[in-house]
Image (cartoon, rainbow, N blue to C red):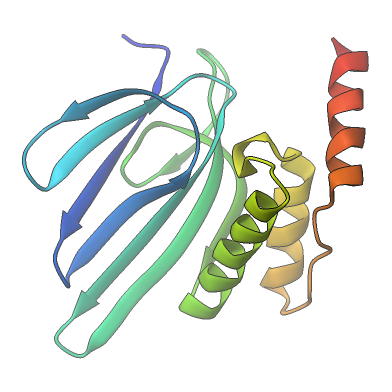
Length: 154
């Protein structure tokens, strides 16, 4: 059994798209032309976007930002994710998913990998968007404070 968290990504044109928006992939395995399994190291953060449609339009839009579970650590189950992960953000509905994707783009524009962002920030974004409020922007100063906190805690 592997210590890695595995995510099955799937793409069926105009029907289903499960993809990783950000995160550090440590292993990739191709199953067939539509499916791959991507693996993440314990403790790493990644965004998993799921979208499904039918003949009448979009049925599901969802984003989960997860922290990959360490062996023996409690985790929540998420479809297509084995064994699961710590949920930092879980939102559905295209308008909310789009806001999170825009926030990830803004973080990248600062020169910061969204996978390195403080987990508390993703909790904050989840909580604020869940009640239709605007979350605070992630800034370089917040990121520097997070990095210093991590160094102190080691």
